[in-house]
Length: 100
Image 1: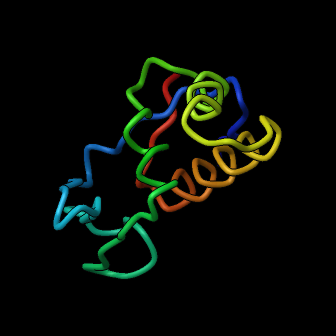
Image 2: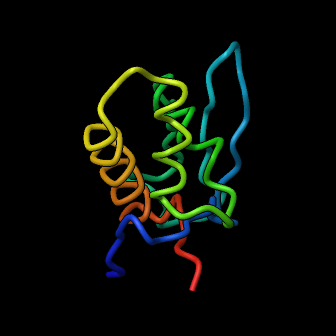
């Protein structure tokens, strides 16, 4: 498995579709083996949505965390931990991919 670090650049997998439904981002796997179970939907928390929207395949996770410091009044280390945890989990589930 790939190691996710603050220097990693992530982007949504081509095997998922993300849609805004009633103010929430819902992620729908469109290929088997994505997520934990077949046909499982993922709904993101407001913080998860903020992170997801910034994962454009260009910014590092560190840059994403820096941008979130402007949105949330929280210490940078706490935001970095949240971004890293979020990205690591979604890479593990193959919802996010790492750019080489």
